[in-house]
Amino acid sequence: MKSATNHRTEATVANSVALPIRATRKAWTGNLTRSGSRTRVSTLGISCSKYARLYPLIFFETYLICSLVVFAFGPVEFQISNPLKLYTFAIVGQIAIAVGYLTGIAKAPTLYCNPLSISKMLKLAILAMLIMSPITIYNRDRSEVSITEAITNPGAAYAARAERLNNRESAPLVSIVRALLGPIFGLFVPLGVIHLKGKRDAWKTLWRIGLLSLLVESILVGAAKGLFDLALVLPWLLWLRFHTGSSTESQHSTRTQARVNRRRNWSFAQKVLLVSITLSALLAGILYFGYSRQSRYELSGGSYPLWTTCWSKDLYGVTLPESVEYPVYMLSRYWTQGYLGLSECLELPFEWSFGIGHSTFLMRYAGILSSNPNYFLNKSYPYRLESETGYSVAHYWHTIYPWLASDLSFPGSILGIAVLAYLLGRAWKDAMWGQNPFAAGFLGQILLLFYYIPANNVRLMFSEEAIAFWGLLFLWKITSRTRRYAPRQFGVAR
Image (cartoon, rainbow, N blue to C red; front, side, top):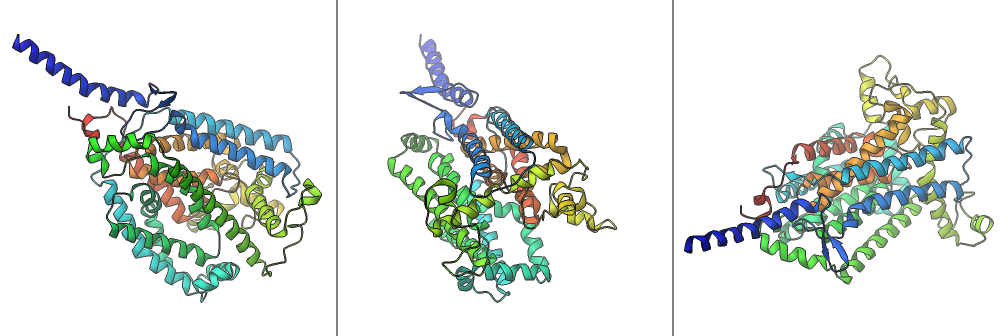
């Protein structure tokens, strides 16, 4: 009798341990638990409604549709000869994005298999940023444009940097080291925002100093891109911060589960904070964008280039102040002008660029090995368009598709964007799971790539960005395992 009782007790204990594990495994394969009227995923890594998995897809589909609408009906008048072909291609591209993303998000999240913990990777990124940022700032400050002058006159800072690049006065060693450290730099902001909570105050202070130096670097360039990039990815990282456990919490399953349960009831204050930070960052980015563009024209505060103002009354019957018209016009132009380049490239025949036509960085270095430095550049769609029509690669955009099509053809670029969407879905799920730091780092890279779809292929065009993108993708894949989750990974005894 006593033996039978013990067996029943052991079976009860085994079932009490096994059931949460099975629920955890099933949560990401579509088996969900009901809590009241809302459906939630039951895991230790994240607490949110099942629709959170679709947030990036919903956002970017809406974002790209809006860019097409602004291109067609916005204040900037673009003359295109093939509207049916252009809009059909763009819409097919968005369908491919949906298919690729849904395929990727349907996969189960992966385990992080690496002796370096998230905490160690974050500390490494902080130290790398603190070492290289002062060197970069000193290198850029040699243009004799101070930080104060760069803030008050971004146009002067931009012109000084362009002159240094044309005269080849920049330090190549600094650029090479920064490029090689691109994957580490790519971890700095995502891991800091998501996993800095729970760290000692000293590391928090060092991360803030590194972030400040990163902002100074962007300001000294005189372009709004660096600040805009931060503003664009910050809301996603803050969302992950509010919904995932910190890297130190995973060591204590009971405390982790309690904190996750508290996050299920996401407070009104957290929602207000996220919305406030998002709107403030975007507003600051837009204002600085308009101010920097105005500064490049060397204008006073009250004068604007021709056609950038006085359009709201004529086009829409609503009079907007000039200080609002100019940023709206310039933002619409920068956001959507790539579709004009895409329209022109769709009329060109395909010439294979040997697998490197998607990246200016790769084409220039490959050209060094050939007798003609511009041989590979002239194979890509954007550079061929410039040689035939004068549509400048340096001054105008083409969307991401002609860059991908230079290697894959335009039908192949649809498949390419679907693969990128698949990676976005996988990265978003792994980042929500909160286990792999390289997933969070790669998420920041691929989010920016999707933001720039209407403009260009900037995340793969230049050395530091390209190495960061491919390096983080490689590190994420080699440190991921797709096997069934071991209970010990979640702090649950077998």
